[in-house]
Length: 355
Image 1 (cartoon, rainbow, N blue to C red):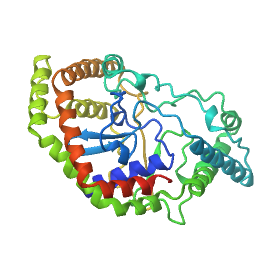
Image 2 (cartoon, helix red, strand yellow):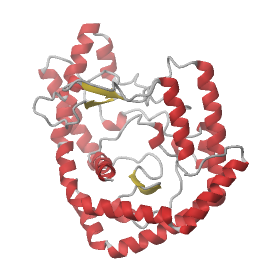
Image 3 (cartoon, rainbow, N blue to C red):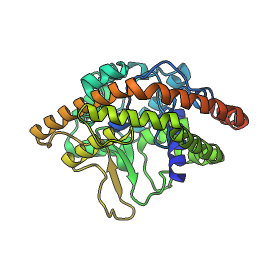
Image 4 (tube, rainbow, N blue to C red):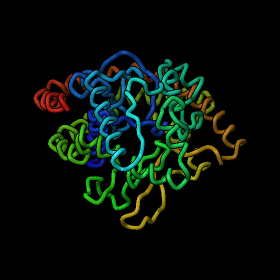
């Protein structure tokens, strides 16, 4: 459970730092559910959500959120610093105002109501190729600059811009294989990484700051277990399982299992994306969404059909017998939690407000 608390802290850090995850795993993406706010949202952030199955998540609530002017100003500073750094390295780079960045081609999809999203995209796992760019990049002057370079020059450009983990596609995350953080003095983060650290601070330092909230995160985990163990939720889960079975999808006992099954099937088709099993110390494992380019088209089509049918049945059954009793139990227990943890929650809210 300690790792899950660290994961919650990391998500909070990424959100606070304005380092949104582009084209992240589809399992982490969810369509808009409602405008309701949980009692904890006031303290844990606008996108706080009880995720079920022993987890809590921090994610954008109500679809993609507009950046505040303060966030936009920080992103402009990152762009300006990146341009200055690239010039020193001998490369051209144009600072691109964040407000001119293209809209994600999937943003409209994730603004759909849950039933419409399930109907068109299922869970968004095999139905959306997350390895492709999130938006059209034709208007970015830096794309044209890079495209004019030779293959060798492109590698040098990417290394200068993104450091030793740069790949040029912008859609992967590189993680040191030894499990250590990226604040090592020998780690080359590139112009963009150094600029982001200068403006937003070092991620590892922010994670260390969040250690003071470990007790709160531990209590949140215990709260979520209480929600899942509540007899109203247990009964609702059983009713949901029976409903799915009646729809031709038997065998699911936990609400996350249908989504997990689709993810597992996609991993089998793509070979997964977990990287080498025994990486050498000091090397990097590149992690990112799997590409569908080399996947058997017929098998992918069959998986997408399976996903759409399962997701529609799942969503229908949740709306019919699960969502309302789960939310009632969750909100009641969260209200009690706020009453008994008000001081800790206020400290978390106030301590993260200006980050």
